[in-house]
Length: 211
Length: 187
Image 1 (cartoon, rainbow over the protein chains, first blue to last red):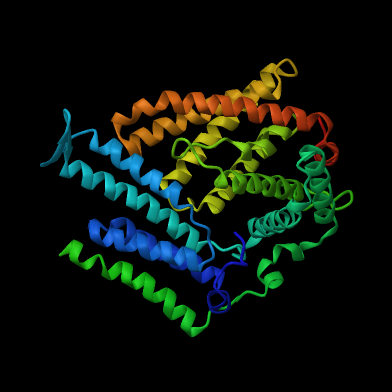
Image 2 (image 1 turned 45 degrees about the vertical axis):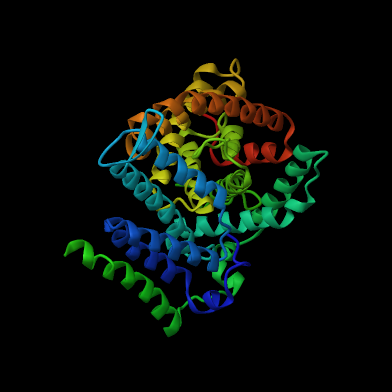
Protein backbone atom coordinates (compact mmCIF):
# COMPACT_ATOMS: atom_id res chain seq x y z
CA UNK A 1 0.00 0.00 0.00
CA UNK A 2 3.04 2.23 0.14
CA UNK A 3 3.02 5.24 -2.17
CA UNK A 4 6.82 5.46 -2.23
CA UNK A 5 7.31 3.04 -5.12
CA UNK A 6 4.52 4.46 -7.29
CA UNK A 7 5.61 6.22 -10.49
CA UNK A 8 5.87 9.99 -9.79
CA UNK A 9 3.89 10.85 -12.94
CA UNK A 10 1.02 8.69 -11.71
CA UNK A 11 1.09 10.26 -8.24
CA UNK A 12 1.07 13.77 -9.67
CA UNK A 13 -1.49 13.31 -12.46
CA UNK A 14 -3.90 10.60 -11.41
CA UNK A 15 -6.00 10.93 -8.26
CA UNK A 16 -6.79 7.91 -6.10
CA UNK A 17 -10.51 8.27 -6.82
CA UNK A 18 -9.95 8.29 -10.62
CA UNK A 19 -7.91 5.09 -10.30
CA UNK A 20 -10.64 3.52 -8.18
CA UNK A 21 -13.49 4.45 -10.55
CA UNK A 22 -11.37 3.50 -13.58
CA UNK A 23 -10.80 0.04 -12.13
CA UNK A 24 -14.49 -0.30 -11.35
CA UNK A 25 -15.44 0.63 -14.94
CA UNK A 26 -12.87 -1.70 -16.51
CA UNK A 27 -13.84 -4.70 -14.39
CA UNK A 28 -17.20 -5.62 -16.08
CA UNK A 29 -15.57 -5.48 -19.55
CA UNK A 30 -12.72 -7.62 -18.25
CA UNK A 31 -15.13 -10.21 -16.81
CA UNK A 32 -17.24 -10.35 -20.01
CA UNK A 33 -14.18 -11.09 -22.15
CA UNK A 34 -14.15 -14.67 -23.45
CA UNK A 35 -11.16 -14.70 -25.81
CA UNK A 36 -8.06 -16.40 -24.40
CA UNK A 37 -5.52 -14.33 -26.36
CA UNK A 38 -7.17 -11.04 -25.32
CA UNK A 39 -7.34 -12.28 -21.73
CA UNK A 40 -3.61 -12.95 -21.78
CA UNK A 41 -2.96 -9.44 -23.16
CA UNK A 42 -5.17 -7.94 -20.42
CA UNK A 43 -3.28 -9.80 -17.69
CA UNK A 44 0.07 -8.58 -19.08
CA UNK A 45 -1.28 -5.00 -19.30
CA UNK A 46 -2.68 -4.92 -15.75
CA UNK A 47 0.45 -6.66 -14.40
CA UNK A 48 2.59 -3.92 -15.98
CA UNK A 49 0.26 -1.21 -14.62
CA UNK A 50 0.44 -2.76 -11.15
CA UNK A 51 4.24 -2.47 -11.32
CA UNK A 52 3.94 1.19 -12.41
CA UNK A 53 1.57 1.68 -9.47
CA UNK A 54 4.46 0.59 -7.23
CA UNK A 55 2.95 -2.74 -6.21
CA UNK A 56 5.23 -5.68 -5.45
CA UNK A 57 4.21 -8.72 -7.48
CA UNK A 58 5.10 -12.17 -6.20
CA UNK A 59 5.57 -14.03 -9.47
CA UNK A 60 6.06 -17.43 -7.79
CA UNK A 61 2.71 -17.02 -6.03
CA UNK A 62 0.87 -16.10 -9.24
CA UNK A 63 2.59 -18.89 -11.14
CA UNK A 64 1.61 -21.46 -8.50
CA UNK A 65 -2.02 -20.27 -8.72
CA UNK A 66 -1.90 -20.59 -12.53
CA UNK A 67 -0.40 -24.10 -12.45
CA UNK A 68 -2.70 -25.43 -9.71
CA UNK A 69 -5.93 -24.17 -11.27
CA UNK A 70 -4.91 -25.44 -14.73
CA UNK A 71 -3.84 -28.87 -13.46
CA UNK A 72 -7.11 -29.42 -11.60
CA UNK A 73 -9.10 -28.59 -14.72
CA UNK A 74 -7.00 -30.85 -16.93
CA UNK A 75 -7.86 -33.82 -14.68
CA UNK A 76 -11.42 -33.81 -16.08
CA UNK A 77 -11.06 -34.46 -19.87
CA UNK A 78 -13.04 -32.38 -22.39
CA UNK A 79 -12.52 -31.96 -26.15
CA UNK A 80 -9.73 -33.15 -28.43
CA UNK A 81 -6.85 -35.11 -26.91
CA UNK A 82 -3.59 -33.16 -27.18
CA UNK A 83 -1.27 -35.64 -25.50
CA UNK A 84 -1.33 -38.80 -23.42
CA UNK A 85 1.07 -39.34 -20.55
CA UNK A 86 0.73 -42.90 -19.22
CA UNK A 87 -3.03 -43.33 -18.98
CA UNK A 88 -3.59 -39.61 -18.40
CA UNK A 89 -5.07 -37.63 -21.33
CA UNK A 90 -4.48 -33.89 -21.69
CA UNK A 91 -7.44 -32.44 -23.58
CA UNK A 92 -7.73 -29.09 -25.38
CA UNK A 93 -11.05 -28.03 -23.86
CA UNK A 94 -9.95 -28.72 -20.29
CA UNK A 95 -6.60 -27.02 -20.83
CA UNK A 96 -8.20 -23.90 -22.34
CA UNK A 97 -10.78 -23.66 -19.52
CA UNK A 98 -8.10 -24.10 -16.85
CA UNK A 99 -5.73 -21.52 -18.32
CA UNK A 100 -8.56 -19.03 -18.94
CA UNK A 101 -9.88 -19.34 -15.38
CA UNK A 102 -6.40 -19.03 -13.90
CA UNK A 103 -5.60 -15.94 -16.01
CA UNK A 104 -8.95 -14.38 -15.05
CA UNK A 105 -8.20 -14.68 -11.35
CA UNK A 106 -4.64 -13.38 -11.65
CA UNK A 107 -5.86 -10.45 -13.81
CA UNK A 108 -8.53 -9.54 -11.24
CA UNK A 109 -5.85 -9.40 -8.57
CA UNK A 110 -3.79 -7.08 -10.80
CA UNK A 111 -6.81 -4.80 -11.41
CA UNK A 112 -7.35 -4.53 -7.65
CA UNK A 113 -3.69 -3.71 -7.11
CA UNK A 114 -3.82 -0.91 -9.68
CA UNK A 115 -7.17 0.55 -8.56
CA UNK A 116 -6.68 0.93 -4.83
CA UNK A 117 -4.15 3.45 -3.56
CA UNK A 118 -3.38 4.30 0.06
CA UNK A 119 -4.67 7.89 -0.31
CA UNK A 120 -8.11 6.82 -1.54
CA UNK A 121 -10.54 8.98 0.44
CA UNK A 122 -13.94 7.52 1.14
CA UNK A 123 -16.75 9.80 2.36
CA UNK A 124 -18.31 9.89 5.83
CA UNK A 125 -17.56 7.88 8.97
CA UNK A 126 -16.13 4.99 6.97
CA UNK A 127 -13.76 7.36 5.20
CA UNK A 128 -12.57 8.77 8.51
CA UNK A 129 -12.06 5.24 9.88
CA UNK A 130 -10.13 4.23 6.73
CA UNK A 131 -7.86 7.26 7.15
CA UNK A 132 -7.12 6.29 10.76
CA UNK A 133 -6.40 2.70 9.73
CA UNK A 134 -3.95 3.82 7.01
CA UNK A 135 -2.30 6.28 9.41
CA UNK A 136 -1.82 3.56 12.09
CA UNK A 137 -0.61 1.07 9.47
CA UNK A 138 1.95 3.54 8.13
CA UNK A 139 3.20 4.26 11.68
CA UNK A 140 3.62 0.54 12.38
CA UNK A 141 5.45 0.04 9.07
CA UNK A 142 7.72 3.03 9.74
CA UNK A 143 8.74 1.74 13.17
CA UNK A 144 8.86 -2.00 12.43
CA UNK A 145 12.67 -1.91 12.16
CA UNK A 146 12.78 -0.91 15.81
CA UNK A 147 11.31 -4.27 16.82
CA UNK A 148 13.72 -6.65 18.51
CA UNK A 149 14.18 -10.19 17.17
CA UNK A 150 15.28 -11.29 20.65
CA UNK A 151 12.20 -9.86 22.37
CA UNK A 152 9.59 -9.76 19.60
CA UNK A 153 6.52 -9.69 21.84
CA UNK A 154 7.75 -7.04 24.26
CA UNK A 155 9.04 -4.78 21.48
CA UNK A 156 5.79 -5.24 19.50
CA UNK A 157 3.82 -4.36 22.62
CA UNK A 158 5.87 -1.18 23.15
CA UNK A 159 5.39 -0.19 19.49
CA UNK A 160 1.63 -0.74 19.61
CA UNK A 161 1.32 1.18 22.88
CA UNK A 162 3.17 4.15 21.32
CA UNK A 163 1.14 4.19 18.09
CA UNK A 164 -2.15 3.80 19.97
CA UNK A 165 -1.17 6.68 22.27
CA UNK A 166 -0.28 8.89 19.28
CA UNK A 167 -3.54 8.04 17.56
CA UNK A 168 -5.51 8.98 20.67
CA UNK A 169 -3.79 12.38 20.77
CA UNK A 170 -4.31 13.13 17.08
CA UNK A 171 -7.40 14.85 15.75
CA UNK A 172 -9.34 14.00 12.59
CA UNK A 173 -6.52 15.26 10.30
CA UNK A 174 -5.05 11.73 10.33
CA UNK A 175 -7.97 10.74 8.11
CA UNK A 176 -6.76 12.91 5.22
CA UNK A 177 -4.08 10.77 3.62
CA UNK A 178 -3.90 12.75 0.36
CA UNK A 179 -3.10 15.95 2.27
CA UNK A 180 -0.35 14.23 4.26
CA UNK A 181 1.23 12.61 1.23
CA UNK A 182 0.82 15.54 -1.20
CA UNK A 183 -0.61 13.28 -3.89
CA UNK A 184 -2.98 14.53 -6.60
CA UNK A 185 -6.44 15.17 -5.20
CA UNK A 186 -7.63 16.11 -8.73
CA UNK A 187 -6.48 14.38 -11.90
CA UNK A 188 -4.85 16.30 -14.76
CA UNK A 189 -6.14 16.06 -18.35
CA UNK A 190 -3.29 13.70 -19.24
CA UNK A 191 -4.08 11.52 -16.22
CA UNK A 192 -7.76 11.34 -17.16
CA UNK A 193 -6.85 10.49 -20.77
CA UNK A 194 -4.48 7.70 -19.71
CA UNK A 195 -7.02 6.05 -17.38
CA UNK A 196 -9.80 6.58 -19.95
CA UNK A 197 -7.72 4.90 -22.64
CA UNK A 198 -7.17 1.80 -20.53
CA UNK A 199 -10.89 1.58 -19.66
CA UNK A 200 -12.08 2.16 -23.24
CA UNK A 201 -9.59 -0.44 -24.54
CA UNK A 202 -11.23 -3.09 -22.32
CA UNK A 203 -14.68 -2.33 -23.75
CA UNK A 204 -13.42 -2.11 -27.35
CA UNK A 205 -11.81 -5.54 -26.89
CA UNK A 206 -15.32 -6.93 -26.33
CA UNK A 207 -16.42 -6.08 -29.91
CA UNK A 208 -15.02 -9.30 -31.50
CA UNK A 209 -16.60 -11.35 -28.70
CA UNK A 210 -20.12 -10.05 -29.39
CA UNK A 211 -19.84 -10.09 -33.21
CA UNK B 1 -19.73 2.17 15.46
CA UNK B 2 -22.66 3.90 17.13
CA UNK B 3 -20.52 5.50 19.83
CA UNK B 4 -17.32 5.83 17.87
CA UNK B 5 -17.28 9.61 17.90
CA UNK B 6 -17.21 9.84 21.68
CA UNK B 7 -13.79 10.45 23.15
CA UNK B 8 -14.31 10.33 26.89
CA UNK B 9 -10.77 9.74 28.06
CA UNK B 10 -7.50 10.75 26.39
CA UNK B 11 -8.95 10.50 22.88
CA UNK B 12 -10.00 6.86 23.31
CA UNK B 13 -12.80 5.99 20.94
CA UNK B 14 -14.17 2.85 19.39
CA UNK B 15 -13.05 4.13 15.96
CA UNK B 16 -9.47 4.49 17.24
CA UNK B 17 -9.51 0.98 18.72
CA UNK B 18 -10.91 -0.59 15.56
CA UNK B 19 -8.49 1.43 13.39
CA UNK B 20 -5.52 0.32 15.46
CA UNK B 21 -6.55 -3.36 15.48
CA UNK B 22 -7.32 -3.29 11.74
CA UNK B 23 -3.91 -1.70 11.09
CA UNK B 24 -2.25 -4.53 13.04
CA UNK B 25 -4.21 -7.04 10.94
CA UNK B 26 -2.98 -5.26 7.79
CA UNK B 27 0.60 -5.40 9.07
CA UNK B 28 0.31 -9.17 9.59
CA UNK B 29 -1.31 -9.52 6.14
CA UNK B 30 1.78 -7.83 4.70
CA UNK B 31 4.04 -10.28 6.56
CA UNK B 32 1.94 -13.19 5.33
CA UNK B 33 2.02 -11.96 1.76
CA UNK B 34 5.79 -12.32 1.86
CA UNK B 35 5.72 -15.89 3.25
CA UNK B 36 5.89 -18.56 0.49
CA UNK B 37 2.74 -20.71 0.52
CA UNK B 38 2.82 -24.52 0.29
CA UNK B 39 -0.73 -24.56 -1.14
CA UNK B 40 -2.21 -21.69 -3.23
CA UNK B 41 -4.73 -19.55 -1.27
CA UNK B 42 -3.44 -21.03 2.00
CA UNK B 43 -2.92 -18.51 4.80
CA UNK B 44 -1.29 -18.97 8.18
CA UNK B 45 -3.89 -16.67 9.70
CA UNK B 46 -1.58 -14.20 11.44
CA UNK B 47 -4.06 -11.43 10.59
CA UNK B 48 -6.50 -13.12 12.98
CA UNK B 49 -4.30 -12.22 15.95
CA UNK B 50 -5.99 -8.83 16.61
CA UNK B 51 -9.41 -10.55 16.61
CA UNK B 52 -8.25 -13.29 18.95
CA UNK B 53 -6.74 -10.95 21.53
CA UNK B 54 -9.98 -8.94 21.89
CA UNK B 55 -12.51 -11.73 21.45
CA UNK B 56 -13.04 -12.13 25.21
CA UNK B 57 -13.93 -8.51 25.91
CA UNK B 58 -15.26 -7.07 22.61
CA UNK B 59 -18.98 -7.30 21.96
CA UNK B 60 -19.88 -9.63 19.05
CA UNK B 61 -20.91 -6.71 16.79
CA UNK B 62 -17.51 -5.11 17.25
CA UNK B 63 -15.76 -8.44 16.59
CA UNK B 64 -17.70 -8.67 13.32
CA UNK B 65 -16.83 -5.05 12.45
CA UNK B 66 -13.15 -5.84 13.07
CA UNK B 67 -13.46 -9.02 10.99
CA UNK B 68 -14.86 -7.03 8.05
CA UNK B 69 -12.06 -4.46 8.35
CA UNK B 70 -9.51 -7.28 8.49
CA UNK B 71 -10.90 -8.89 5.33
CA UNK B 72 -10.93 -5.57 3.44
CA UNK B 73 -7.38 -4.84 4.67
CA UNK B 74 -6.23 -8.27 3.50
CA UNK B 75 -7.91 -7.62 0.15
CA UNK B 76 -6.03 -4.33 -0.17
CA UNK B 77 -2.66 -5.85 0.74
CA UNK B 78 -3.01 -8.99 -1.39
CA UNK B 79 -4.84 -7.14 -4.16
CA UNK B 80 -7.75 -9.56 -4.12
CA UNK B 81 -10.47 -6.96 -3.50
CA UNK B 82 -12.06 -7.39 -6.95
CA UNK B 83 -11.76 -11.17 -7.16
CA UNK B 84 -13.49 -14.35 -5.99
CA UNK B 85 -10.70 -14.79 -3.46
CA UNK B 86 -12.04 -11.78 -1.56
CA UNK B 87 -15.46 -13.42 -1.23
CA UNK B 88 -13.88 -16.69 -0.06
CA UNK B 89 -11.89 -14.78 2.51
CA UNK B 90 -15.01 -12.84 3.60
CA UNK B 91 -17.17 -15.93 4.09
CA UNK B 92 -14.31 -17.89 5.67
CA UNK B 93 -13.54 -15.08 8.12
CA UNK B 94 -17.20 -14.55 9.05
CA UNK B 95 -17.63 -18.29 9.68
CA UNK B 96 -14.45 -18.25 11.73
CA UNK B 97 -15.62 -15.21 13.77
CA UNK B 98 -18.99 -16.89 14.50
CA UNK B 99 -17.33 -20.11 15.70
CA UNK B 100 -14.64 -18.30 17.72
CA UNK B 101 -17.26 -16.14 19.46
CA UNK B 102 -19.32 -19.25 20.22
CA UNK B 103 -16.36 -21.24 21.58
CA UNK B 104 -15.10 -18.25 23.59
CA UNK B 105 -18.56 -17.67 25.10
CA UNK B 106 -19.42 -21.30 25.82
CA UNK B 107 -15.94 -22.29 26.92
CA UNK B 108 -15.45 -19.17 29.02
CA UNK B 109 -11.99 -19.42 30.65
CA UNK B 110 -11.85 -23.24 30.35
CA UNK B 111 -10.96 -22.95 26.66
CA UNK B 112 -7.72 -21.15 25.91
CA UNK B 113 -7.16 -18.90 22.90
CA UNK B 114 -5.44 -21.91 21.29
CA UNK B 115 -8.78 -23.76 21.32
CA UNK B 116 -10.67 -20.69 20.13
CA UNK B 117 -8.19 -20.10 17.30
CA UNK B 118 -8.13 -23.74 16.21
CA UNK B 119 -11.94 -23.89 16.04
CA UNK B 120 -11.97 -20.68 13.99
CA UNK B 121 -9.26 -21.95 11.63
CA UNK B 122 -11.13 -25.22 11.00
CA UNK B 123 -14.39 -23.34 10.28
CA UNK B 124 -12.68 -20.87 7.97
CA UNK B 125 -10.81 -23.59 6.06
CA UNK B 126 -13.90 -25.78 5.57
CA UNK B 127 -15.82 -22.82 4.12
CA UNK B 128 -12.93 -21.69 1.89
CA UNK B 129 -12.15 -25.19 0.58
CA UNK B 130 -15.81 -25.79 -0.24
CA UNK B 131 -16.16 -22.47 -2.08
CA UNK B 132 -12.91 -22.87 -4.02
CA UNK B 133 -13.85 -26.41 -5.07
CA UNK B 134 -17.27 -25.18 -6.21
CA UNK B 135 -16.15 -22.02 -8.03
CA UNK B 136 -12.47 -22.25 -9.02
CA UNK B 137 -10.80 -25.64 -9.00
CA UNK B 138 -13.70 -27.98 -9.83
CA UNK B 139 -14.78 -31.27 -8.16
CA UNK B 140 -11.49 -33.05 -8.92
CA UNK B 141 -9.74 -30.81 -6.43
CA UNK B 142 -11.33 -32.33 -3.32
CA UNK B 143 -7.98 -34.14 -3.01
CA UNK B 144 -6.36 -30.93 -1.76
CA UNK B 145 -8.92 -30.62 1.06
CA UNK B 146 -7.16 -32.92 3.61
CA UNK B 147 -3.69 -31.29 3.42
CA UNK B 148 -5.32 -27.84 3.34
CA UNK B 149 -7.35 -28.62 6.48
CA UNK B 150 -4.40 -30.22 8.30
CA UNK B 151 -2.12 -27.27 7.55
CA UNK B 152 -4.90 -24.86 8.54
CA UNK B 153 -5.42 -26.60 11.88
CA UNK B 154 -1.69 -26.55 12.68
CA UNK B 155 -1.57 -22.85 11.77
CA UNK B 156 -4.62 -22.23 13.99
CA UNK B 157 -2.89 -23.84 16.98
CA UNK B 158 0.26 -21.76 16.44
CA UNK B 159 -1.61 -18.47 16.01
CA UNK B 160 -3.68 -19.27 19.13
CA UNK B 161 -0.49 -19.93 21.12
CA UNK B 162 0.96 -16.57 20.05
CA UNK B 163 -2.30 -14.79 20.96
CA UNK B 164 -2.44 -16.50 24.39
CA UNK B 165 1.17 -15.60 25.15
CA UNK B 166 0.80 -11.98 23.98
CA UNK B 167 -2.49 -11.48 25.88
CA UNK B 168 -0.95 -12.63 29.14
CA UNK B 169 1.25 -9.54 29.59
CA UNK B 170 0.58 -6.93 26.90
CA UNK B 171 0.23 -3.45 28.39
CA UNK B 172 -1.25 -2.21 25.09
CA UNK B 173 -4.00 -4.78 25.37
CA UNK B 174 -4.62 -3.84 29.01
CA UNK B 175 -5.07 -0.21 27.98
CA UNK B 176 -7.32 -1.24 25.09
CA UNK B 177 -9.46 -3.33 27.45
CA UNK B 178 -9.74 -0.53 29.98
CA UNK B 179 -10.66 2.03 27.26
CA UNK B 180 -13.20 -0.37 25.79
CA UNK B 181 -14.90 -0.97 29.14
CA UNK B 182 -15.15 2.78 29.66
CA UNK B 183 -16.98 3.10 26.35
CA UNK B 184 -18.91 -0.13 26.60
CA UNK B 185 -19.46 -0.85 30.32
CA UNK B 186 -19.83 -4.55 31.15
CA UNK B 187 -23.50 -5.22 31.91
